[in-house]
Structures are given as structure tokens and as C-alpha cells.
Image 1 (cartoon, rainbow, N blue to C red):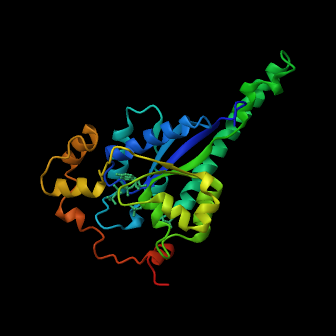
Image 2 (cartoon, protein in one colour):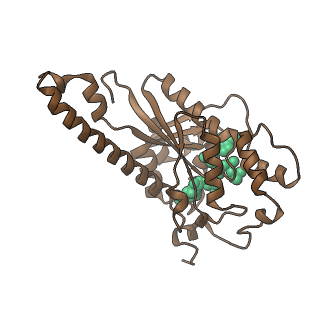
Image 3 (cartoon, rainbow, N blue to C red):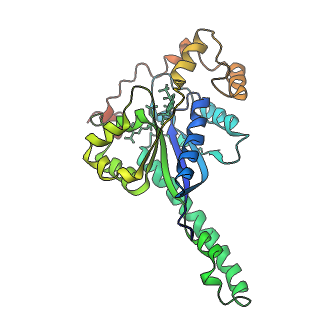
Length: 274
Ligand SMILES: Nc1ncnc2c1ncn2[C@@H]1O[C@H](COP(=O)(O)OP(=O)(O)OP(=O)(O)O)[C@@H](O)[C@H]1O
Ligand SMILES: NC(=O)c1ccc[n+]([C@@H]2O[C@H](COP(=O)(O)O)[C@@H](O)[C@H]2O)c1
């Protein structure tokens, strides 16, 4: 938190991004506006983390392509970045672990900047004995808060039996926080009201209303592509060009993992029965 009580925030979006769409990018803009409007937060960075191939969702194409499309989609953004760590893991990684990984990265970056700070500080202290009290020093000392950015369907998936570990849900909403974009067919306020753990941590769950009903989904984009329909303006031009060049989505690609029957609980065991 800076001296004015404004907390820097890093937004982390986890998902298939199969492919990344304009709605995925819009989620970041909506969340930044909402959080900064409150006067309590300053969003300093957005991270897109595509899921690894081990997720084995039907129609999930190779992580290298999903990663490359996310990179193309964000090449003109000065604050949204793409991180490959999750997508490079051979096994599926639960979202709480992904968040933990990024939090550790943020802490490490913070420690590095504090080291630089200490060197600068030692030099500067000779000139300014009041430096410890200075606001710029405080700003560099305090690390940002990491929040999971998701659509309301992901929040409501917390209620699917055995899909999420209870301790992971508690950790995500209790320790980190959630920025959740409304999605038609979902009622996140009601869902929070009906869950004791979400209700307890409701101050850490930011529901962001998308007033322009927006049903762009990766499923719709893949379906339209299979049928030879235009998907222009649903995703960045550079992403569309990449899809066409690599001929990514077809009837065949949609059948990927079709024979993999993963009950929710089996995700925890890498597909072996439990
Ligand atoms: N139209 C939308 N409104 C709100 N959130 C969305 C929308 N589309 C995607 N999201 C969110 O984006 C994140 C990444 O999701 P994902 O990559 O699974 O996208 P998707 O479009 O829902 O995919 P699919 O259609 O393949 O299931 C999730 O948190 C999801 O809830
Ligand atoms: N238990 C968990 O951590 C858990 C369960 C289901 C989905 N997820 C994540 O949610 C994201 C979206 O998944 P879907 O594309 O299946 O909606 C993915 O990043 C996936 O890894 C996490």
C-alpha cells in the first residue's frame, strides 16, 4: 500500500485461451477500470497464463500455439503480458498452485528491487537522513497484491463437486482475491450469498459488471472457424492470421482429447483412478 492507501494490483487470468479472444482482453480493461475507480487499487500489470496440455480438455490445441496467439494478442498492450510457466508444465497444475507460483515470482522481483533499493539507499542516506520516512521508499518496499481474474462461470464452478479443493478456494479468495466479470447465465452475487466461505471473504471478491452483454467465447470462435464462418473482430487480426497460417482449428482438432474421460476428481490425480 502506498502512503495514500492505494494498493498496487497484479491481475492473473488462467484459462485455456483456445484461442484468446477480444473478450479475454476486455476482461483486463474492465477489471482495471473497476478496481481503480474504487480509489483503493492501482493495477500495475496483467498476466495471461494459458493452461498446459495436461489439462486435456476436449478440443484443446497445443500450448505452444495458444501461447503464441496470446503473445500476438497482447503485443500492443503496455501492461498485459503472457506467461509460459503454467503451459510448459507436463502435468496439469491446479490454479491455486499457479497463483502461488506467480506470487513467489512477485516476491522475488520485490526482493531484487529492495536489494537495489538498499544500495541506492545507503548512498542516498548520506545526503538525506530522513530517507526512511520518504514516500517513494515506502512505495518500493510494498509488494503488489495478486488477484485472480476470471469470468463468473469460473466462480460458479467452485460449486461443482470435487472440481476444486476446498482449501484452494479458501486460499484463492482469502489470501489473494478475485476479480470476477459477470457473464450471462451466471449470478455471482447469489452464488457468493449461498456459499459460507465466499460470503466470509466477500470483501476480497470484486464483481465487475459487463454492461454490454458479451457472449464471445472461445467455443463460439472454434465452431465458427470449423464452419468456415468469419470470426473477424471477435479476436485480434494478428491472432486470426496466425490461426489461418497454421490451420489450427478443424473437425480433427475439436476431437483432440475426446476419448479422455476425466472426472473432475481425477484432475487431482493426473487421470489415474482414485
Ligand atoms: N464472454 C465472457 N464473459 C466473461 N468472462 C469470460 C468470457 N469469455 C471468457 N471468459 C473468462 O475468461 C477466462 C479464460 O477462459 P477460457 O479460456 O476457458 O475461455 P472461454 O471462452 O470460456 O473458453 P471455452 O469456450 O473454450 O470454454 C475464464 O475466467 C472465463 O470465465
Ligand atoms: N481445481 C482447480 O484448480 C481447477 C479446476 C477446474 C478448472 N481450473 C482452471 O480454470 C481455468 C478455466 O478452465 P475451463 O477452460 O475448463 O473453464 C483453467 O485455467 C483451469 O486450470 C482449475
